[in-house]
Every structure is written in structure tokens, then in C-alpha cells.
Image (cartoon, rainbow, N blue to C red; front, side):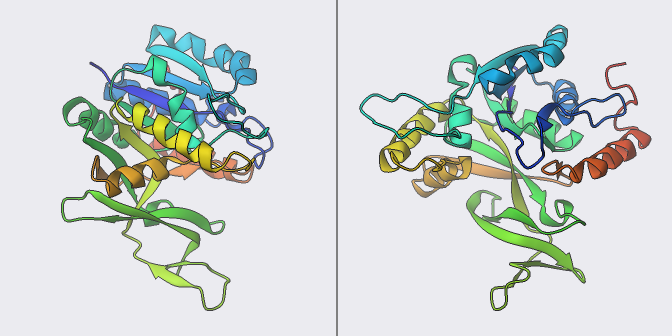
Length: 299
């Protein structure tokens, strides 16, 4: 059975100033998502599932319904407010986080699947190694994360926040430590830059999580239970979010699931701010010049 690619695309893009998930980046105005789909098809994925807000439906279908001749396409909605039996929850203006985004796809995914962000570029080879894992190694007790090399994810335009991974001798994930305000200075990666007495160093060869996960469908049950308990603990907090690393950490701690950290040398880039767009365009043009992608992506 071919694996599925679950694309999280329900964010509003408030810092970007628009619906960045479908903003044109490629030479023919292709959004980053199209490069993800192209790489996924080449790697052997059999289905794409978009997690979107219901109000984005027409905008997404206008672009991606045409891909149904190449790969199966599904759309699921992530609502801002949810009704849960036995819980009285405060009105919210944003959804419950990335685990909630994964959970809304429960009814359309029955096979091993990968999760990515819509507005991030992960590199062509990462899809090949992810597909290989999902087809040959994924199980209810063995899932994975693509581990990017920290130095390949830094920005020349300012500091970034990263989840720095600690792994054991078998490259299984032990923990993810959030590090803020990271940047390279004189060949050394420092964090908390600009904060006296708080600055520290991180090995530039460290693995970092860029929210690229490989899951067995049994994870839906774990997320459902975890999210319910999180909602129960935060019924009056309108901004509380339950993230993928939260459920991953809990399953590692309970020893129910081992997460392989699969190394990739691919460079990653994301488009968070309008200023990031020029860098993204230039990087894709470099890949096209090297023959990674054709100039006209779909021929």
C-alpha cells in the first residue's frame, strides 16, 4: 500500500500578509506545495491529504483538483472551535494546534503517512527516504522523523527558533529541546542571541525537527486521547495548543513508540514573512539550474 502525504495548510499566514500556502514561488507561479507534491509522486506516495480551513476550500480546489489525474487528492477541514462530549470549552480564534490538524484526517487515512507543513520546502531526497521508511519499516511501535542538520536550516537574514534533537546510539529520538534566537556567528551556532547571560552554543551538526514526521495510522487513537486530556486541562485558555512534539514526547517517555531520526542532507527553507519570498524563489531557481526540477514543473 502506498503511503499518504498529509499537508498541514490551515494556517492563516498573518505574519506573511496573505494565504502563503498557495502564493506563487516557482518560475510559473507554482506554490511550494506543488514542489512537495512533485517530490512525493516521484518518491512513491499514493495520496495527498490537505488539512485546510473550510473558508480556503474554493481557493485550494481551484489549484489542486487538477492534480487528481496524477495522484489521489483529499481535503479535510480543521475547525477553530470543536464540540467534545463532557467538555465546556471557551470560544477560540485559532485551532488547537498541529496534533488537532493531524487528527481531522483520521477518517481518510488508513495507511502509514507523512506530515509536513504546506509552506516549507523539505528537499527531494527527503521524500524518498520517508517513503522507504513508511513502506518497509513503519509499525504501531516504530515511527519516524526526518532529521535536518541544523546548519542547513539557518537563515542569513536573522535568528530562527529550532527544535534541537537528542538521539541515542541507534538514532532513536530521546527528546526535542526548543532553542530560540539561533544564528551562526564565526562558524559557531549560538542561541538566545542578544540576551546577556543566557546565550549558549549548539553543535551545527545537530539534528533538528522541521515538523516532518512519519506515522502509523494507529497514532490517531493516541492523539485523540492526548488532545482530549489537553482540552480537559485547558478549557478556558483560548490560545492553548497541543503540538506534534507533545504527543511524540509522551509516547517516547512511556516507551510505547520509538521514533527513528532519519538523517537528510537536504536543505530546508520556510516562508514565514514576505521577505522570505525572494530567498525561496532564488533557491528553487538554483535547484532548477542543477536539474533537480524541470523549469516547467508539470511538463
